[in-house]
Amino acid sequence: MDYSRWKSNTQNVYSKWSDEWSANKTMIKIADIKELKLNITWKLLYRGLLEKQISINEIIEYAKEQLEKGDDRIEICELAGSSDYDLEDVMDTLYELAKEEKNPDDLEDRKLRAARVNKFLKDKNTNCIDGLMGLTELWLELGYTADSPHIIQGKDNSISPMEYYTDANYNYLFEKNKHWLKDEVYFLIHNEK
Image (tube, rainbow, N blue to C red; front, side, top):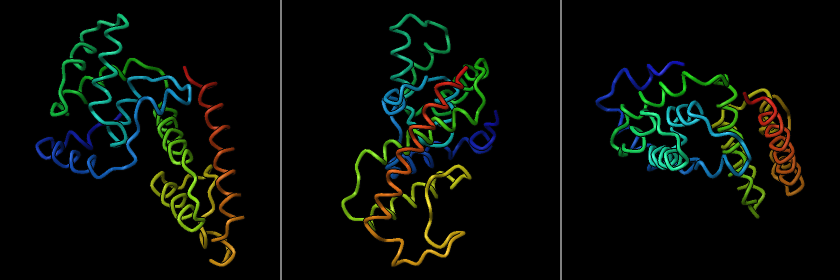
């Protein structure tokens, strides 16, 4: 795990991340991950915070829940007692907890991606143009990986805008994304350690 991205300039990290978080409409809540029946791990929370997809407050609340359930390790106590201004301490503590876990980073990243896709698919846009643009934005933000179910108009294809921006294509791609999500969640559940 490499957390040098945030560690290199800790003085400006909180204010920069705070600004980005307040503008970020794609934040994931721990409930979004639980809804998919995926295990919450400290590595998942670390990766989510590192990628600005999960807020510090979500992590602090989760640590409090774990304390209530009897996990009274010192790191959990430290997290539960943190505030949203303690970014460096929270990152350090999460890093220590995450080091103990066996799931590979990419598996935890895929959980975050699945939660983002699920969150997007909850509200189907009634306008096909807005819906297709939203799906495209989502997958571009997620890195448009090789396993993406989405088709971007004009990217590695010769689909014209007239063919692409139709209700039929939007319905097709929306359903294709739902099917991908179901398969992805199945894979993640069966490959967690």
